[in-house]
Length: 513
Image 1 (tube, rainbow, N blue to C red):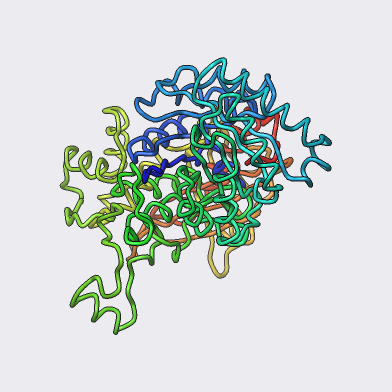
Image 2 (image 1 turned 45 degrees about the vertical axis):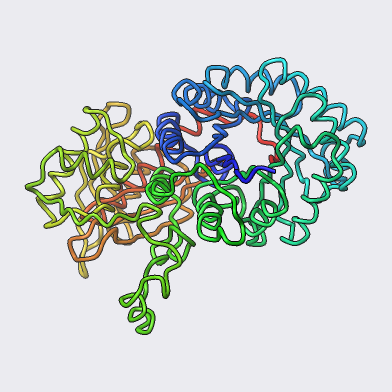
């Protein structure tokens, strides 16, 4: 059995199912390019039948990537498979990933089909997909709660129909590592012609066991891991790419398997996903959290100073936490900025670099030193934002202990300038009231959070909001040296994302693997 584990990244499909994490085509393209640089073997670019926006994004990604397998998800029906092929056919290495549920509870209540009918549907879907490409993956949705012998039967039938990858998902995050490993071994040993296919696993984190289950499955014989950056995804999320890869990298003595991931791009990719989706990485997140390599306890600090390996099992540089001491400031040039951004994972065009450089110079006039986190915010403000329907042109607020807070705002709405003013309980509330009135939004503010991007009183402030309107949820982010301006930018970014979701409605949202 091969000691190579293939990394199947589904950040752009399953990861995008995180509430409010919808990305537009430009954002998906930029992230797909970064994931190829990271070295993922297979990139699941989306679910083409879900919406025209998803179809367009998958198609554009398929055209752009040079080495990575590009997969499109499809339910086990011809319409979905036609859509998936229509989108991925442009790829250098296209894959169709089709699925159907196999657990008794799904058969009874969702599909209303018996086992024989499900096997027939799976075989027909795989055979139909095989007519487009030899690279077909079949998934048994809710596999961890399925009957083992039935799994072996449907997997064997899928192999005979032409599938080269079989996916055993823990769709609802129900499995326990030892149990899941035993199931993987059973499937490998009892599925007819299993030697002709690769067994994959796709684990969810509802019990906090996604990474543990994935590693247990790899140890038991699975050779493809389906993961997302930062573990994002619906509900509690998916198996985290960085955790699986670095566990394999660090514990070669116990799990001697390799991947094609270039680990030095893990941290920059994590940051880029966070910036694009607006989903903040928790400080104590393994591998990529802000505290992952921080040592506050005196005994730990003493040990690390004497030998880092006393309390660090990985070197920060291994995942791309830069040791570069180059300081950027107002005298730094365009070349230095381009090199620093490349180190951070941003390959910008000349036009994009000019835009970022102008904003960098503007910030450098306000701050003595510009940090990496500041540069990320500048890139996000300049080139990673949703297509703008609304843009902030002017903001003035008055507030104080004896003043009724008021905000005057000028917006550009599809290029047309509008102005207005409103009162509020505070300066931010007043600004939001004025913006809401000008835009005419009925959205509800579900979340509002403020943080400093770096230390110091001159730090950029970063604001994250979550908006909800007519069943749609969108995250918005904004940053500025002035926290009220940052708040306004975040609100407007969220409103722009809502507009994008309205224009690109999802027409099919089944429970997926």
